[in-house]
Amino acid sequence: MKREMSKARQALVDSYIESLEKEIIPWKQGWSTVKNYNPVTKTQYRGINRLILYNAVAKNNYNDPRWMTFSQIKAANYKLNNAKGKGVPFEKCSLYDMETKKYLNISDVDKIVREENLSRQEKYERFKWSVKVFYVFNASLIEGIEPYTIEEKDIHIDVNDLACRFIDRYCKNANLSIVENFLCEYPVYKPVNDMILIPAKGSFDDEYEFVSAVLHECCHSTMKENRLGRSYPNLKTNNERYAFEELYAEIASSFLCADIGIEIKQEKIDNHTAYVQFWYKQIKKNPEIIFSALNGAEEISEYIEVKGELQELLIESKKEIYTEFDEETNTYDLCV
Image (cartoon, rainbow, N blue to C red; front, side, top):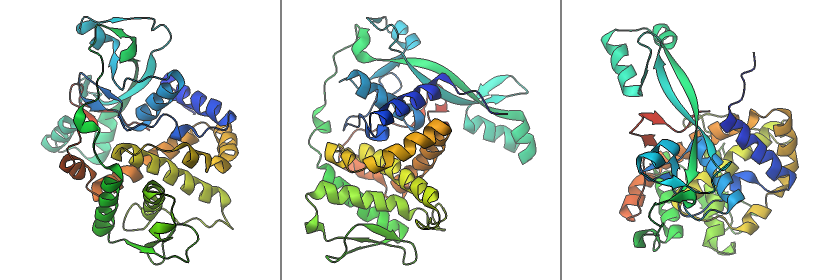
């Protein structure tokens, strides 16, 4: 039986279809070097919620990255102004204990499983993931909140240098080779040799173009068996599987660019319109496809960020980061 789509997911699908109809690549919309976050919990939004917010930013031209729930706004004695219909639906996932009828965090569940020596089957029967939909509002709609100011430390980071150091660390830790060759016509990951072959750096228009091309191929490199283990698609024999792999890499590299702080240029977006009509047809036919793609892309980007030690590099660069885990509610933003 097909499950009913939540308001948050339906809003994202509708937004994507609308963008694709206009030949706009939706997962590239609204990226900026400032991350959307909750100023109360200091949570940086990730997964589906991250994409939902970027679409809302692009649609409404918001310049403030802060988002709050209605209860948080009320608790702070703020008020909403001209916000009717502008609440953005979010998903929040948590574990529900069928026995005690309580919501728990992952560590609490693990503790119960150990103490009561529950089998895997008993664990799955007792604890169920629960999805709740709630709304967040952009700070530009909130009266009483302090005006948003960009901190000095958020401005002066050489993001291309950070990206290059991140790529170097990922390749070193993943035992992956990058080979520059002036005879190479386009970047490509070669799974047989487990290497990225790329045109000489000097042949790119600028360092941004070089960095974004390498990050895209790094995403493909996670298909290797000793990494995330996806099957390598053949363009001649499985065009649809190949297109899916490209979608994974496209969205995952967009996540990486955003997390590093690289703003995606419009000409870079325009270079990928060949995928638009294909994905328009696929998503219209089966909306759940996009959540499968987001799930795969999130897994890829997080794997590369851990291997490449991005958080450590960000700290070294004195760039403020926020946790993906909501300590107030003990839940994660990602749920696909």
